[in-house]
Image (cartoon, rainbow, N blue to C red; front, side, top):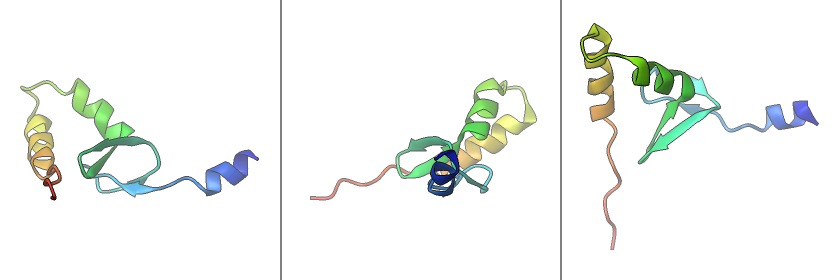
Length: 67
């Protein structure tokens, strides 16, 4: 049964690393994988990679209100 579940996992493209992953979070309409989430949380603001993550997150847009 374990292999059956593994075959049916939903894979999504991460908005940060742009790789296809199965585990992560949804932020508005974007998916962020667990690996990127963990790295972003641990990144200090003085780290050069911090700016990279900020730029990537700016591309994450929230959905509009449709009436």
